[in-house]
Amino acid sequence: MTESTTAAATQPAWPGRAGHPVDPVDGGPIALLLVEDDDGDALLVEEHLADAGLDVRLVRARTLDEATARLDVDCVLLDLGLPDSVGLGALQTLLTAGAPAVVVLTGRTDTETGLRAVAAGAQDYLVKGEVDGELLGRSVRYAVQRRRLQAVDRELYRSMVRAEETVRLESALLPRPSVQDARLEVRVGYRAGRDGVLGGDFYDVFERPDGTVLAIVGDVCGHGPDEAALGAVLRTAWRTLVLAGTATADLLPLLERVLESERTRGEVFTTMSMVEIAPDRGTVDLYLAGHPVPFLLGDPAAGTRSELLPRELRGRALGIPVDGAWRPSRLELGDRWRLMMYTDGVLEATIGGTHERIGKAGLLELVDEVLATGPEDPVEPVLREVRRRHGGELVDDTAVVVLGWDGTAA
Image (tube, rainbow, N blue to C red; front, side):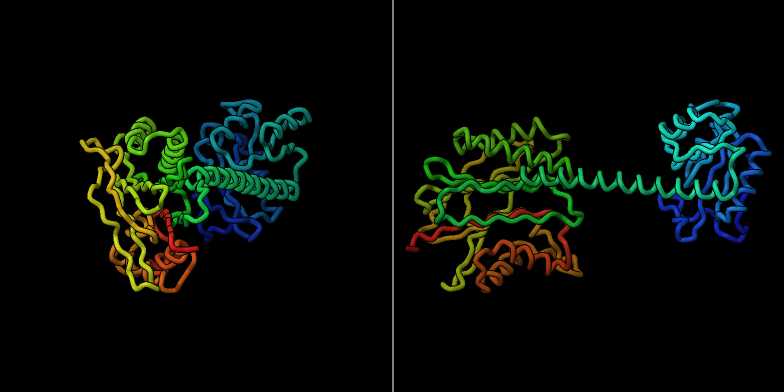
């Protein structure tokens, strides 16, 4: 195999080949692979390129096998008559192997072959005896640019598909609460992690026909599309079971069965906290499945501070193969209360520039500072303040639910 170049020997070899080709519009060289077994035709191509003033790094392959190993280029000039391949099969082989822009340069003059070549994926079809420097240079430039535009279009399409998938997942993970009692405060919020990809955090709030309100916050271990899909399945299964009138005590055991049947790896588990608010709104049953304990929010006007909800029982995470059931801790909250459920993204956020995590004590302090400013909805201000203290987007995704009741209000 021989290599030749039409550019000065002092120029660096092929900048940007590993997925970042230099844009010839900006004056950078084009990496060009000439697949040609005839030495005279190869020399003529070099002369045409020199006449065109096209800055290229030219590599030559004499056979199709050689060419398939040298496809890390911007453009391929392909002869259809090679020692190991004749006809359009060579074009198809190169395209299947991942060739970039391909310009067919052959001695065949029939129009039908040219049309078939372009239909098969070639950017252009040139006849050797009819080509000069200007035509060859223009064809190579246009072929490279068209190929790059096609790549941009494909990536844009993929981005649109991913965005649509994210929206569908988001609607499954983060539904609209279904509560008819207008006096019950329901606030929800969510922040994706640093990469913007949905993780396995989810929430839901639903009111039964008898006035009982159930709320759940869950977190599938890990972060990524598999975890998001599993979280969506668990959240949907939870609401389906509630709609079907399943007893509250049976919800977590049934969700564990769903988890075990749907998870892609045996070590995947899910933590959850769930509350059942009685129709009179004064009593709350708290179920914990390896999840952080919700907060009872303070009231700055009354001089009270936020604190962890008292709990007597704490069950294991779903999917952990150890004995243990989930039994509720009954809490008498009275006529006026607010509680906050959350996933551990807000706890594990580090304080900017250090390895220190915000933690439960830090989050309680942060929540009280936010409440002191008097926001009607504390969820977004709390998430903003956590992000500010962290110094940027959080690494882990986070879901937050605030529920409240004021039986003393007129």
